[in-house]
Each structure stands twice: as structure tokens, then as C-alpha cells.
Image 1 (cartoon, rainbow, N blue to C red):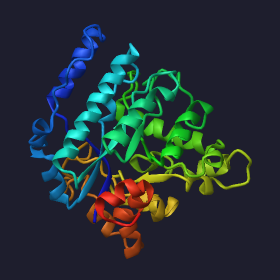
Image 2 (cartoon, rainbow, N blue to C red; image 1 turned 135 degrees about the vertical axis):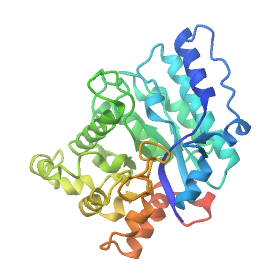
Image 3 (cartoon, rainbow, N blue to C red; image 1 turned 60 degrees about the vertical axis):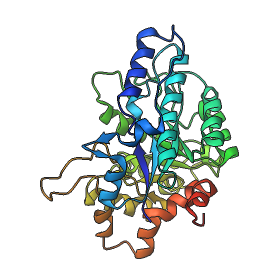
Image 4 (cartoon, rainbow, N blue to C red; image 1 turned 90 degrees about the vertical axis):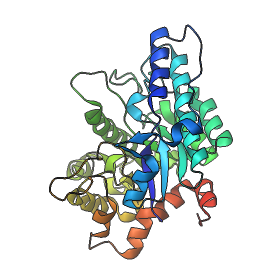
Length: 338
């Protein structure tokens, strides 16, 4: 079984139109109706194919769907329009799940706002997990989208959310989002913020206080594996009793890297037991590599071709680690042991 732990919803133009209406009116005319139903999303296409066709093309069995992060408009005001848009996006994911209940599973986008306590997201977490059957949540480490108003993820600001996640046994995908700073595209901002999130978490007591907290870092840990020598020399946790690598391996990492060399480095640094198959397909890597003629985001053959990975390692990366991280919520629905 191949479980892709990092995919984003294909929601079509209705979601964008709904967002535009909220931004234009700033919520003056109320919440409105987004009109996204299972029938509407069923035949939507990306790169000329339906989402299911894109999965089948590369042999993916199951996809964990989250919102497209750069659309989540966390820095916008008033706060209520951020909530309404998050709800609409999660409803779109639920519509996809209704059409493909054995292949699509939801990872909820949160209505985060700059400088606001993450407790403002709890109602939507409860709705998505308890009512819609989602298996995880997605956290933007910079809801200010470049305004620097929200502290790093090791700060006490985030502790109420971690308490909530641990109590519910809900994991999170850590994924950067939009950026209003013209120096950075959202692609750049993803890598910057995910790197900052990792370093902030490692240089904090978060995993001492919340030892069962489950966090999946997008894009292969961003810049951290490549710069690991620098951080080994600088960071050893809050009490200087663990190595940087010890702390790093309290996190999980997806395989959202589009070349063999980077994947090999990730597996060597953090170990295959901390890695979950994730491609973001369809997304940034859904283009043809002119050197091979293959999709950049067709990662299964790249991982299968890494000779130092054992068969057990590959099974763990492709599905076992995702089942372990997401627990009973995912494994029971797939008829697999957690």
C-alpha cells in the first residue's frame, strides 16, 4: 500500500470565488454559501486529469488531503472571514472524501490568525475530527504571513494547541503558507518557515512536556538536513542533555523532495523510521523532468531505487509510518493494524 501523507485538495473555481467574495465584502454580507458538493468536485481536473487519475498514474493508493496552504489567508481581517474560508476549504476536502471514502482522508486547515491564541481553532478541529472524520490537522507556523507577530513553534503561545492535539491523539502536518513580503515567494516562505519551526521546536522543552506530540515536517524538513552540521554545533535542546540528532528524531518528515540525492540525505540524517511518503501531487512537482521524462513528483521509483534502504524500510516509508503516526483513525478505516 502507498499512502501519500502530503497532498492538497483540488477544489475548483467555486472555492476561489467564495474566497473573493469574503475578501471583497470583509464579511459584511455574512458567511454565504460556497456551493462545493461531492458532485461538484467529482470530475474537477488538475493538469488535465482528475485527482484520482493523477494518483493512479503513479501507483498511490491513499491520499491525505489538506488545504492549499497559500490560499488560507491567515493574515486577513476580520478574523471571521478566515474562519469561514477555513470551514469552506475543509468542506471541500470532506466532499472529496465522500466520493472516494477509501482513498481520500482529511487533514484539516485551521482558521489561524496573526498574534491570536491557537485556541481560536479548537471548534474547527472538533468539527473536522469528530464530525467529518478527518485524521489530522495542518498548522501554519507563520499565520501572519510575514509579519513576524507569531512566535516560533517552541514558544508557550502554541502549548494550548499541543495539549489539544495530545488529548485527541491528532497529528499535524507543519506547512508554511502565503507571504506578503515581496522578497519571498510562497515557495521560498514554505522552506524558511518550516526550517524555523524545526529549530524552534528542538531548542525548546516542547517534547519534554508533550512526549506523544506528533508533528510531520513538510518538504523533507526544509533546509535542516542540508545544514545539519551547523545545527549540531549550536543546538542540543534546552538542558544540553541530548544531541541535535536526538531532538530531531522526535519529529517526522515527509519525502516532498524531487531528487534522489536529497531523499538519500534525508533518510541518512533522520532515519527511514521517521519518514512518511509525501509528494504534494498535484502541486509544484507536477512537471516533467527533461532529464528523465518522468514527473518530478513521481517519487516511488526514486525511493525504490535507493539501494541502502531495506524492504522493511521502504514499507515503513510508503505506509507503515503513516499508519503508526495517524493511529486508529486511519488504520481502522483502511483495515490495517496501527
